[in-house]
Length: 495
Image 1: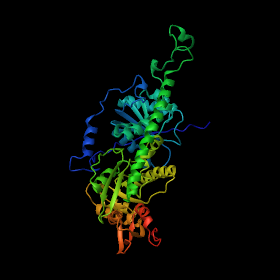
Image 2: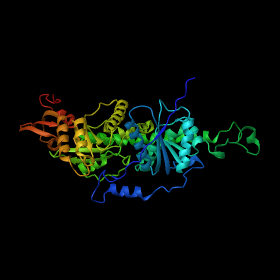
Image 3: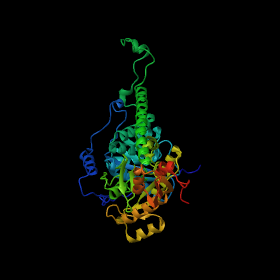
Image 4: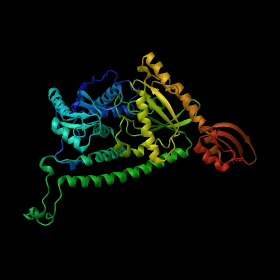
Protein backbone atom coordinates (compact mmCIF):
# COMPACT_ATOMS: atom_id res chain seq x y z
CA UNK A 1 0.00 0.00 0.00
CA UNK A 2 1.23 3.47 -0.87
CA UNK A 3 2.41 5.38 2.17
CA UNK A 4 0.24 8.51 2.73
CA UNK A 5 1.96 11.82 2.22
CA UNK A 6 2.64 14.02 5.20
CA UNK A 7 2.59 17.78 5.25
CA UNK A 8 4.30 20.25 7.53
CA UNK A 9 3.29 23.70 8.70
CA UNK A 10 5.80 26.49 8.14
CA UNK A 11 5.52 29.56 10.42
CA UNK A 12 5.35 32.91 8.68
CA UNK A 13 7.13 35.90 10.25
CA UNK A 14 5.01 38.75 11.55
CA UNK A 15 4.56 41.86 9.43
CA UNK A 16 6.82 44.85 9.95
CA UNK A 17 4.51 47.72 10.81
CA UNK A 18 7.06 50.53 11.13
CA UNK A 19 5.92 52.58 8.14
CA UNK A 20 2.33 53.12 9.17
CA UNK A 21 2.13 56.73 7.96
CA UNK A 22 3.84 56.43 4.60
CA UNK A 23 0.64 56.36 2.52
CA UNK A 24 0.11 60.10 2.55
CA UNK A 25 -0.56 63.19 4.61
CA UNK A 26 -2.47 66.44 4.50
CA UNK A 27 -1.58 69.66 6.26
CA UNK A 28 -5.10 71.00 6.84
CA UNK A 29 -7.99 69.43 8.81
CA UNK A 30 -9.74 68.07 5.71
CA UNK A 31 -12.81 65.90 5.37
CA UNK A 32 -10.55 62.88 4.99
CA UNK A 33 -8.83 63.58 8.30
CA UNK A 34 -12.18 63.90 10.04
CA UNK A 35 -13.28 60.57 8.57
CA UNK A 36 -10.05 59.00 9.79
CA UNK A 37 -10.62 60.44 13.27
CA UNK A 38 -14.16 59.04 13.34
CA UNK A 39 -12.96 55.65 12.13
CA UNK A 40 -10.33 55.50 14.87
CA UNK A 41 -12.73 56.60 17.60
CA UNK A 42 -14.27 53.16 18.07
CA UNK A 43 -12.05 50.16 18.70
CA UNK A 44 -12.90 46.50 19.16
CA UNK A 45 -12.58 45.37 22.77
CA UNK A 46 -10.90 41.99 23.22
CA UNK A 47 -12.96 39.39 25.01
CA UNK A 48 -16.39 40.74 24.10
CA UNK A 49 -18.44 38.46 21.86
CA UNK A 50 -20.56 39.79 19.03
CA UNK A 51 -22.33 36.42 18.64
CA UNK A 52 -25.98 36.88 17.78
CA UNK A 53 -28.79 34.94 19.43
CA UNK A 54 -31.09 35.60 16.50
CA UNK A 55 -29.61 36.17 13.05
CA UNK A 56 -32.80 37.84 11.78
CA UNK A 57 -31.99 40.92 13.86
CA UNK A 58 -29.35 42.04 11.35
CA UNK A 59 -29.50 39.26 8.75
CA UNK A 60 -25.77 38.70 9.09
CA UNK A 61 -23.67 36.92 11.69
CA UNK A 62 -21.13 39.50 12.82
CA UNK A 63 -17.50 38.51 13.04
CA UNK A 64 -15.57 38.45 16.27
CA UNK A 65 -12.01 39.15 15.24
CA UNK A 66 -9.67 39.68 18.16
CA UNK A 67 -6.82 37.21 18.68
CA UNK A 68 -6.37 35.18 15.51
CA UNK A 69 -4.29 32.39 13.99
CA UNK A 70 -3.85 32.41 10.21
CA UNK A 71 -3.66 29.24 8.13
CA UNK A 72 -3.11 28.84 4.39
CA UNK A 73 -2.66 26.09 1.82
CA UNK A 74 0.16 26.58 -0.68
CA UNK A 75 -0.92 24.81 -3.86
CA UNK A 76 1.00 26.64 -6.60
CA UNK A 77 3.56 29.34 -7.24
CA UNK A 78 6.81 30.05 -5.44
CA UNK A 79 7.47 30.16 -1.72
CA UNK A 80 7.81 33.95 -1.96
CA UNK A 81 4.31 34.19 -3.47
CA UNK A 82 2.88 31.97 -0.73
CA UNK A 83 4.56 34.11 1.94
CA UNK A 84 3.26 37.30 0.31
CA UNK A 85 -0.28 35.92 0.30
CA UNK A 86 -0.08 35.13 4.01
CA UNK A 87 1.43 38.53 4.78
CA UNK A 88 -1.46 40.14 2.94
CA UNK A 89 -3.92 38.04 4.96
CA UNK A 90 -2.22 39.28 8.14
CA UNK A 91 -2.61 42.88 6.94
CA UNK A 92 -6.28 42.23 6.22
CA UNK A 93 -6.78 40.78 9.71
CA UNK A 94 -5.08 43.75 11.35
CA UNK A 95 -7.15 46.17 9.26
CA UNK A 96 -10.27 44.40 10.59
CA UNK A 97 -9.08 45.05 14.14
CA UNK A 98 -7.43 41.73 14.99
CA UNK A 99 -4.20 40.78 16.70
CA UNK A 100 -2.33 38.15 14.67
CA UNK A 101 -0.72 35.60 17.00
CA UNK A 102 0.57 32.97 14.57
CA UNK A 103 0.54 32.20 10.85
CA UNK A 104 0.83 28.69 9.43
CA UNK A 105 1.08 27.47 5.88
CA UNK A 106 0.75 23.96 4.46
CA UNK A 107 2.16 22.64 1.19
CA UNK A 108 -0.17 20.28 -0.64
CA UNK A 109 -1.60 19.71 -4.12
CA UNK A 110 -5.07 21.05 -3.31
CA UNK A 111 -7.09 21.96 -0.21
CA UNK A 112 -8.67 19.06 1.62
CA UNK A 113 -12.35 18.86 0.59
CA UNK A 114 -13.43 18.04 4.15
CA UNK A 115 -11.47 20.33 6.48
CA UNK A 116 -9.35 22.47 4.10
CA UNK A 117 -6.08 21.28 5.70
CA UNK A 118 -6.85 17.62 6.48
CA UNK A 119 -8.03 16.04 9.72
CA UNK A 120 -4.53 15.44 11.13
CA UNK A 121 -3.39 19.00 10.50
CA UNK A 122 -6.67 20.28 11.89
CA UNK A 123 -5.79 18.61 15.19
CA UNK A 124 -2.35 20.26 15.08
CA UNK A 125 -4.07 23.59 14.41
CA UNK A 126 -6.25 22.98 17.47
CA UNK A 127 -3.08 22.56 19.55
CA UNK A 128 -1.73 25.89 18.23
CA UNK A 129 -5.03 27.58 19.09
CA UNK A 130 -4.85 26.25 22.66
CA UNK A 131 -1.20 27.25 23.01
CA UNK A 132 -1.69 30.83 21.79
CA UNK A 133 -5.11 31.42 23.34
CA UNK A 134 -6.60 32.46 20.00
CA UNK A 135 -10.36 32.76 19.60
CA UNK A 136 -10.52 32.85 15.80
CA UNK A 137 -8.89 30.99 12.90
CA UNK A 138 -8.69 32.75 9.51
CA UNK A 139 -8.13 30.64 6.39
CA UNK A 140 -6.43 32.08 3.31
CA UNK A 141 -9.09 30.98 0.85
CA UNK A 142 -12.84 30.68 0.45
CA UNK A 143 -14.17 27.71 2.39
CA UNK A 144 -17.28 25.76 1.47
CA UNK A 145 -20.04 25.62 4.10
CA UNK A 146 -19.09 22.00 4.83
CA UNK A 147 -15.38 22.83 5.26
CA UNK A 148 -16.24 25.74 7.54
CA UNK A 149 -18.44 23.59 9.77
CA UNK A 150 -16.04 20.63 9.89
CA UNK A 151 -12.96 22.72 10.71
CA UNK A 152 -14.85 24.69 13.35
CA UNK A 153 -15.86 21.45 15.08
CA UNK A 154 -12.22 20.35 15.29
CA UNK A 155 -10.55 23.59 16.42
CA UNK A 156 -13.53 24.55 18.63
CA UNK A 157 -13.21 28.28 17.92
CA UNK A 158 -14.72 30.48 15.26
CA UNK A 159 -13.36 29.87 11.75
CA UNK A 160 -13.40 32.68 9.17
CA UNK A 161 -12.30 32.50 5.56
CA UNK A 162 -10.64 35.21 3.46
CA UNK A 163 -13.92 36.26 1.84
CA UNK A 164 -15.70 36.80 5.16
CA UNK A 165 -12.71 38.80 6.40
CA UNK A 166 -12.77 41.15 3.40
CA UNK A 167 -16.54 41.54 3.72
CA UNK A 168 -16.09 42.52 7.37
CA UNK A 169 -13.56 45.21 6.42
CA UNK A 170 -15.90 46.57 3.77
CA UNK A 171 -18.73 46.67 6.32
CA UNK A 172 -16.56 48.72 8.69
CA UNK A 173 -15.41 51.22 6.04
CA UNK A 174 -18.60 51.81 4.03
CA UNK A 175 -19.96 55.32 4.65
CA UNK A 176 -22.28 56.29 1.78
CA UNK A 177 -25.80 54.93 1.35
CA UNK A 178 -24.80 53.18 -1.85
CA UNK A 179 -21.66 51.69 -0.31
CA UNK A 180 -23.56 50.33 2.69
CA UNK A 181 -26.21 48.80 0.44
CA UNK A 182 -23.57 47.16 -1.75
CA UNK A 183 -21.74 45.70 1.25
CA UNK A 184 -24.97 44.42 2.81
CA UNK A 185 -25.90 42.69 -0.43
CA UNK A 186 -22.48 41.06 -0.71
CA UNK A 187 -22.64 39.87 2.90
CA UNK A 188 -26.04 38.30 2.42
CA UNK A 189 -25.01 36.55 -0.80
CA UNK A 190 -22.05 35.09 1.06
CA UNK A 191 -23.94 34.10 4.22
CA UNK A 192 -27.08 32.64 2.64
CA UNK A 193 -25.63 29.16 1.91
CA UNK A 194 -23.69 29.23 5.18
CA UNK A 195 -26.57 29.77 7.60
CA UNK A 196 -26.63 27.17 10.33
CA UNK A 197 -28.41 26.82 13.66
CA UNK A 198 -27.18 27.79 17.08
CA UNK A 199 -28.96 25.91 19.87
CA UNK A 200 -32.71 26.02 20.29
CA UNK A 201 -33.22 29.23 18.36
CA UNK A 202 -33.21 27.23 15.13
CA UNK A 203 -35.59 24.47 16.31
CA UNK A 204 -38.61 23.60 14.19
CA UNK A 205 -41.69 25.74 14.62
CA UNK A 206 -44.91 24.12 15.78
CA UNK A 207 -46.78 22.36 12.99
CA UNK A 208 -49.00 19.40 12.26
CA UNK A 209 -50.43 17.76 15.36
CA UNK A 210 -47.94 19.56 17.55
CA UNK A 211 -49.47 22.81 16.47
CA UNK A 212 -52.90 21.60 17.45
CA UNK A 213 -51.98 21.28 21.11
CA UNK A 214 -53.19 24.70 22.14
CA UNK A 215 -51.51 26.62 19.31
CA UNK A 216 -54.73 27.81 17.80
CA UNK A 217 -55.52 29.03 14.31
CA UNK A 218 -52.47 29.67 12.11
CA UNK A 219 -50.10 27.33 13.94
CA UNK A 220 -51.16 24.05 12.32
CA UNK A 221 -49.44 22.80 9.18
CA UNK A 222 -46.10 21.37 8.08
CA UNK A 223 -44.21 24.12 9.93
CA UNK A 224 -41.05 25.96 8.92
CA UNK A 225 -37.67 25.78 10.57
CA UNK A 226 -36.12 28.92 11.96
CA UNK A 227 -33.29 28.67 9.44
CA UNK A 228 -35.79 28.48 6.57
CA UNK A 229 -37.49 31.60 7.89
CA UNK A 230 -34.13 33.38 8.00
CA UNK A 231 -33.30 32.37 4.43
CA UNK A 232 -36.64 33.63 3.18
CA UNK A 233 -36.24 36.96 4.97
CA UNK A 234 -32.68 37.36 3.69
CA UNK A 235 -33.80 36.69 0.09
CA UNK A 236 -36.51 39.31 0.47
CA UNK A 237 -33.98 41.79 1.86
CA UNK A 238 -31.56 41.01 -1.00
CA UNK A 239 -34.28 41.70 -3.57
CA UNK A 240 -34.99 45.05 -1.94
CA UNK A 241 -31.28 45.95 -1.87
CA UNK A 242 -30.87 45.06 -5.56
CA UNK A 243 -33.73 47.41 -6.42
CA UNK A 244 -32.20 50.21 -4.35
CA UNK A 245 -28.75 49.72 -5.89
CA UNK A 246 -30.30 49.74 -9.37
CA UNK A 247 -31.98 53.07 -8.62
CA UNK A 248 -28.72 54.52 -7.29
CA UNK A 249 -26.93 53.20 -10.38
CA UNK A 250 -29.35 55.18 -12.56
CA UNK A 251 -28.47 58.36 -10.67
CA UNK A 252 -24.75 57.57 -10.97
CA UNK A 253 -25.11 56.95 -14.72
CA UNK A 254 -26.89 60.28 -15.10
CA UNK A 255 -24.07 62.13 -13.33
CA UNK A 256 -21.48 60.28 -15.42
CA UNK A 257 -23.32 61.16 -18.65
CA UNK A 258 -23.42 64.80 -17.59
CA UNK A 259 -19.66 64.78 -16.98
CA UNK A 260 -19.06 63.06 -20.32
CA UNK A 261 -21.17 65.54 -22.24
CA UNK A 262 -19.19 68.42 -20.74
CA UNK A 263 -16.20 67.41 -22.87
CA UNK A 264 -13.81 67.26 -19.90
CA UNK A 265 -11.59 64.14 -20.04
CA UNK A 266 -12.31 61.58 -17.30
CA UNK A 267 -9.42 59.79 -15.57
CA UNK A 268 -10.20 56.83 -13.30
CA UNK A 269 -7.56 56.10 -10.65
CA UNK A 270 -7.43 52.33 -10.19
CA UNK A 271 -5.03 50.00 -8.46
CA UNK A 272 -4.39 47.52 -5.68
CA UNK A 273 -5.67 48.29 -2.21
CA UNK A 274 -3.31 50.51 -0.18
CA UNK A 275 -1.28 51.41 -3.28
CA UNK A 276 -1.73 55.10 -2.48
CA UNK A 277 -4.54 56.01 -4.91
CA UNK A 278 -6.23 58.44 -2.54
CA UNK A 279 -2.90 60.03 -1.62
CA UNK A 280 -2.11 60.51 -5.29
CA UNK A 281 -5.51 62.05 -5.98
CA UNK A 282 -5.04 64.42 -3.04
CA UNK A 283 -1.65 65.41 -4.43
CA UNK A 284 -3.04 66.01 -7.93
CA UNK A 285 -6.30 67.76 -6.97
CA UNK A 286 -6.15 68.74 -3.29
CA UNK A 287 -9.32 66.71 -2.78
CA UNK A 288 -8.80 66.00 0.93
CA UNK A 289 -9.87 62.36 0.67
CA UNK A 290 -9.43 60.02 3.63
CA UNK A 291 -5.88 58.63 3.61
CA UNK A 292 -5.01 55.70 5.84
CA UNK A 293 -2.27 53.05 5.79
CA UNK A 294 -4.85 50.27 5.75
CA UNK A 295 -6.44 47.98 3.20
CA UNK A 296 -9.71 49.15 1.61
CA UNK A 297 -9.63 52.58 3.27
CA UNK A 298 -11.59 53.96 0.28
CA UNK A 299 -14.88 52.34 -0.75
CA UNK A 300 -16.91 55.28 -2.03
CA UNK A 301 -15.75 56.83 -5.32
CA UNK A 302 -14.74 60.48 -5.13
CA UNK A 303 -14.70 62.74 -8.21
CA UNK A 304 -12.73 65.98 -8.41
CA UNK A 305 -11.86 68.39 -11.23
CA UNK A 306 -8.32 69.72 -11.63
CA UNK A 307 -6.26 71.57 -14.23
CA UNK A 308 -3.06 70.26 -15.80
CA UNK A 309 0.02 72.34 -16.58
CA UNK A 310 -1.27 73.25 -20.05
CA UNK A 311 -4.55 74.53 -18.59
CA UNK A 312 -6.56 71.48 -19.67
CA UNK A 313 -9.23 70.52 -17.13
CA UNK A 314 -9.49 66.86 -16.12
CA UNK A 315 -11.98 64.98 -13.94
CA UNK A 316 -10.28 62.46 -11.63
CA UNK A 317 -12.24 59.64 -9.95
CA UNK A 318 -10.79 57.68 -7.03
CA UNK A 319 -12.13 54.09 -7.06
CA UNK A 320 -12.22 51.16 -4.65
CA UNK A 321 -8.99 49.17 -4.43
CA UNK A 322 -8.61 45.63 -5.69
CA UNK A 323 -7.00 42.60 -4.08
CA UNK A 324 -5.96 39.10 -5.10
CA UNK A 325 -8.95 36.75 -5.11
CA UNK A 326 -11.43 39.59 -4.63
CA UNK A 327 -14.70 37.91 -3.57
CA UNK A 328 -17.12 37.50 -6.45
CA UNK A 329 -19.92 38.79 -4.24
CA UNK A 330 -18.11 42.12 -3.91
CA UNK A 331 -17.37 42.41 -7.62
CA UNK A 332 -21.05 41.86 -8.35
CA UNK A 333 -22.34 44.17 -5.60
CA UNK A 334 -19.89 46.96 -6.46
CA UNK A 335 -20.43 46.65 -10.22
CA UNK A 336 -22.16 50.04 -10.47
CA UNK A 337 -19.20 51.64 -8.69
CA UNK A 338 -16.61 49.77 -10.76
CA UNK A 339 -18.35 50.91 -13.93
CA UNK A 340 -16.68 54.28 -13.39
CA UNK A 341 -13.82 52.48 -15.15
CA UNK A 342 -15.86 51.82 -18.29
CA UNK A 343 -16.69 55.49 -18.85
CA UNK A 344 -13.15 56.77 -18.33
CA UNK A 345 -10.97 58.21 -21.09
CA UNK A 346 -7.85 57.01 -19.27
CA UNK A 347 -7.02 54.57 -16.46
CA UNK A 348 -4.36 55.79 -14.04
CA UNK A 349 -3.14 52.43 -12.71
CA UNK A 350 -1.35 53.01 -9.39
CA UNK A 351 1.10 50.35 -8.17
CA UNK A 352 2.72 50.10 -4.74
CA UNK A 353 6.43 50.22 -5.55
CA UNK A 354 7.35 49.02 -2.05
CA UNK A 355 5.40 45.77 -2.43
CA UNK A 356 7.66 42.72 -2.82
CA UNK A 357 5.60 41.44 -5.81
CA UNK A 358 4.28 44.45 -7.78
CA UNK A 359 3.75 42.31 -10.89
CA UNK A 360 1.18 40.27 -8.94
CA UNK A 361 -0.66 43.47 -8.01
CA UNK A 362 -0.78 44.60 -11.63
CA UNK A 363 -2.09 41.23 -12.78
CA UNK A 364 -4.83 41.10 -10.12
CA UNK A 365 -6.08 44.61 -10.96
CA UNK A 366 -6.14 43.98 -14.70
CA UNK A 367 -8.08 40.73 -14.23
CA UNK A 368 -10.87 42.51 -12.31
CA UNK A 369 -10.99 45.39 -14.82
CA UNK A 370 -11.19 42.92 -17.72
CA UNK A 371 -14.14 41.16 -16.07
CA UNK A 372 -15.99 44.43 -15.49
CA UNK A 373 -15.41 45.60 -19.06
CA UNK A 374 -16.53 42.24 -20.44
CA UNK A 375 -19.77 42.32 -18.43
CA UNK A 376 -20.45 45.89 -19.57
CA UNK A 377 -19.50 45.21 -23.23
CA UNK A 378 -17.19 48.20 -23.00
CA UNK A 379 -13.88 48.89 -24.71
CA UNK A 380 -10.85 49.05 -22.45
CA UNK A 381 -9.60 52.63 -22.01
CA UNK A 382 -5.86 53.30 -22.41
CA UNK A 383 -3.78 52.75 -19.28
CA UNK A 384 -1.00 54.83 -17.73
CA UNK A 385 1.01 52.90 -15.14
CA UNK A 386 2.13 54.88 -12.09
CA UNK A 387 4.51 53.38 -9.52
CA UNK A 388 3.93 55.07 -6.17
CA UNK A 389 5.86 55.14 -2.84
CA UNK A 390 9.31 55.41 -4.44
CA UNK A 391 10.43 57.24 -1.28
CA UNK A 392 10.28 53.85 0.49
CA UNK A 393 12.67 52.19 -2.01
CA UNK A 394 16.43 51.85 -2.01
CA UNK A 395 18.21 53.18 -5.13
CA UNK A 396 18.96 49.64 -6.33
CA UNK A 397 15.34 48.55 -5.91
CA UNK A 398 14.11 51.62 -7.77
CA UNK A 399 16.52 50.98 -10.66
CA UNK A 400 15.31 47.39 -10.89
CA UNK A 401 11.69 48.51 -11.01
CA UNK A 402 12.43 51.06 -13.72
CA UNK A 403 13.95 48.28 -15.81
CA UNK A 404 10.92 46.02 -15.25
CA UNK A 405 8.35 48.75 -16.00
CA UNK A 406 9.96 51.08 -18.57
CA UNK A 407 6.64 52.70 -19.59
CA UNK A 408 5.62 53.62 -16.03
CA UNK A 409 5.85 56.97 -14.28
CA UNK A 410 7.56 56.81 -10.86
CA UNK A 411 6.21 59.10 -8.15
CA UNK A 412 5.84 59.59 -4.42
CA UNK A 413 2.46 61.05 -3.47
CA UNK A 414 3.84 61.65 0.02
CA UNK A 415 6.89 63.74 -0.96
CA UNK A 416 5.69 65.05 -4.33
CA UNK A 417 8.58 63.47 -6.26
CA UNK A 418 7.71 62.78 -9.90
CA UNK A 419 4.33 64.57 -9.86
CA UNK A 420 5.42 67.14 -12.45
CA UNK A 421 6.44 64.36 -14.82
CA UNK A 422 3.11 62.63 -14.17
CA UNK A 423 1.13 65.76 -15.05
CA UNK A 424 3.16 66.14 -18.26
CA UNK A 425 2.49 62.51 -19.20
CA UNK A 426 -1.20 62.97 -18.48
CA UNK A 427 -1.33 66.00 -20.78
CA UNK A 428 0.55 64.05 -23.46
CA UNK A 429 -1.67 60.94 -23.28
CA UNK A 430 -4.96 62.86 -23.09
CA UNK A 431 -3.84 65.15 -25.89
CA UNK A 432 -3.29 62.12 -28.14
CA UNK A 433 -6.91 61.08 -27.52
CA UNK A 434 -8.30 64.39 -28.81
CA UNK A 435 -10.20 64.70 -32.07
CA UNK A 436 -9.26 67.27 -34.72
CA UNK A 437 -12.27 69.24 -35.92
CA UNK A 438 -12.91 72.01 -38.43
CA UNK A 439 -16.13 73.89 -37.76
CA UNK A 440 -17.88 77.13 -38.65
CA UNK A 441 -19.37 78.47 -35.42
CA UNK A 442 -22.07 81.14 -35.59
CA UNK A 443 -21.24 84.27 -33.64
CA UNK A 444 -24.19 83.43 -31.37
CA UNK A 445 -22.40 80.29 -30.11
CA UNK A 446 -19.73 81.98 -28.07
CA UNK A 447 -20.32 79.32 -25.41
CA UNK A 448 -18.92 76.62 -27.70
CA UNK A 449 -15.94 78.78 -28.59
CA UNK A 450 -15.24 79.22 -24.88
CA UNK A 451 -15.39 75.42 -24.36
CA UNK A 452 -12.92 74.91 -27.19
CA UNK A 453 -10.51 77.31 -25.51
CA UNK A 454 -11.05 75.70 -22.08
CA UNK A 455 -11.03 72.01 -22.97
CA UNK A 456 -9.19 71.81 -26.30
CA UNK A 457 -6.31 73.31 -28.24
CA UNK A 458 -6.99 75.94 -30.89
CA UNK A 459 -4.98 75.35 -34.07
CA UNK A 460 -6.40 78.08 -36.35
CA UNK A 461 -9.28 80.56 -36.43
CA UNK A 462 -10.65 82.98 -39.02
CA UNK A 463 -13.57 85.37 -38.80
CA UNK A 464 -16.00 85.16 -41.70
CA UNK A 465 -19.38 86.61 -42.53
CA UNK A 466 -21.27 83.53 -41.29
CA UNK A 467 -19.24 83.02 -38.11
CA UNK A 468 -15.81 81.95 -36.89
CA UNK A 469 -14.04 79.18 -38.77
CA UNK A 470 -12.20 77.06 -36.22
CA UNK A 471 -9.67 74.27 -36.54
CA UNK A 472 -8.89 72.67 -33.18
CA UNK A 473 -8.17 69.49 -31.26
CA UNK A 474 -10.83 68.77 -28.68
CA UNK A 475 -12.00 65.82 -26.52
CA UNK A 476 -14.23 63.31 -28.30
CA UNK A 477 -17.32 64.33 -26.31
CA UNK A 478 -16.93 67.96 -27.33
CA UNK A 479 -16.27 66.91 -30.93
CA UNK A 480 -19.67 65.19 -30.93
CA UNK A 481 -21.32 68.44 -29.82
CA UNK A 482 -19.48 70.40 -32.53
CA UNK A 483 -20.38 67.92 -35.29
CA UNK A 484 -23.48 69.95 -36.17
CA UNK A 485 -21.16 72.78 -37.24
CA UNK A 486 -18.58 70.63 -39.04
CA UNK A 487 -16.94 72.51 -41.92
CA UNK A 488 -16.16 70.60 -45.10
CA UNK A 489 -16.58 67.28 -43.26
CA UNK A 490 -13.22 67.47 -41.54
CA UNK A 491 -14.07 66.08 -38.09
CA UNK A 492 -11.92 62.99 -37.72
CA UNK A 493 -9.84 60.97 -35.32
CA UNK A 494 -6.08 61.52 -35.38
CA UNK A 495 -4.15 59.13 -37.55
